[in-house]
Image (tube, rainbow, N blue to C red; front, side, top):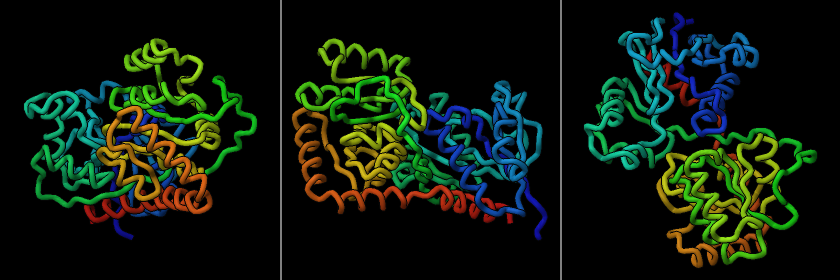
Length: 358
């Protein structure tokens, strides 16, 4: 066996599973756990390493994350053969010069803050690019978007799709919903940030009277207040409901029982929730922006604009087609969801590690 090499996974976001990055970190590690990597010592970075050790045992090594590690003077002291920055925004960097794998989910921050390449956030990202030994992207769109805005160094690049977070269907029979589910409902879930574009589907609901809309996610944020005001101002309090953060059981309950899953996001590097909904064979309606057509493929329905009447037309035409071709549509949706596999994604990352190190 070749001498063991050490790999540091900068996974401190793992404790926040309600976010896409938290999900990515956790599911990647779960995928790796199923694989053999005797030639590698993989260190997981977490504020609560004992929780990970209780779950994954001696398969991995563990590093205690402290908030001050993001400051250059207090960067982690260990020397590692490879540092994997598992997202483009991490502020924690290696103390020593080492091989560096950068995984890019999106560079939406360029549009959200400033296209000024001298902006601090853009400068920090450019430093990551310059440090990179290799770069992986979670979608073709993420790669294209990065190339559109930044000069990419001459290093190996590859695309590794995320897997489907729903690997096990949970028993939801004892789940008690805090919002009404006594009439057909549409469902969506995600962070409460402007690019999720919940406003579009709420405006559509003004003329959809036979269905409710349920939205899950941390609605205590500023955008949550915007959404709550929109619901109130339009008299939709008995039709559009916010659950707040939701458990995995709750999420699966709503996905399993909804009439359709709606995801009108205008900027996504990938988009995990639509894949999860497809696991249940539910019709999925997405915007045609950024990475979403790449994820939904020919299994999803798409909105090309956000005019409420147009969105309503696309929605009900899609629902009617699904109802009239249910077996065929459900099979297509479930097969599409199954094509995104975390074990395969983890194997692809391990392959990149070995190509860099050996």
